[in-house]
Image (tube, rainbow, N blue to C red; front, side, top):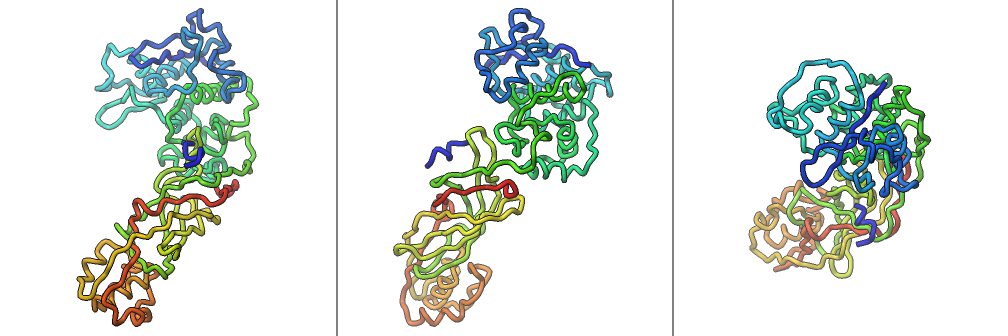
Length: 415
């Protein structure tokens, strides 16, 4: 497997959260030992979120930890985010409070959660739960800010999302309008590829700092930062992304538990990408659910899947050079065998179906079980008189994983 396969955020003072493995009270930005430091040991000048973090720290809006680290990649929980927005944005309540059954009175963020709720930034879950320790996804952060700051989308939400995000289809339905509004307000900061929102990815401290700083810019409370990762500042034609030769693309075939073909036949087959293909920063390049169109072909005494076309979940299509390993495992069909048992839960190449029909004497094999769906009758004569036939037996779960035979380049219109 190549290295590519491992690719896998007027206002008031904002509370920076001191997050460790245990339940720790938040670290308030007004603590002078930390609030005065505008730089952090683990946030180098060339770090993508450095200008956002530095400016918020300089304004005493966020703070780091006692060891002078900011821990930018650390995830943010719903309780922690509630504390951040409750202290960042002093707004009038838009609804009454509620007692969440999973937020006890002595919980460190109870007051912040109530403020975030009554001000319209956050809501609960069915069953009157808040899930305070649940990591908050990026799309939920953006929805929270858009709702709490009363953003309204002015254009067509789908057009906006599709214009700026190659993974717009991954945005949850409830989040589409608020995220479109947040995009218009230039709140959205996407690293490392501005075209990928990664809406369901857990927000990090760096993400939240960037989103909140952009909210300050939108409110006229901060000076705009010239970052290449702010979505609405970017051209809609980003550079080509290259997926290198040797990358494995995990696929599945759900229509059958096994596939039978003869050694000599070519059979059309469409596979489904089973897992996201991602960068080291977890940017999705090929989303799960995309399709790989190709065919099973004779190869070295067996059969091999050869891909021809990749169809993304967005509907974009382009050529792909990828193959499976050669499968040589066989299954013997003998005269008089029960054809129904042989074809049960199996997909058949047309020649394999004809062979089974001729050897077993069963002329009623249904065409819906056959890859390609036609031509069985014309092929039966090739196998008449045989007492047995050996077919290539393919296990889709283990035999059809694909490896790129050449670099795959995704152009902007295809991501």
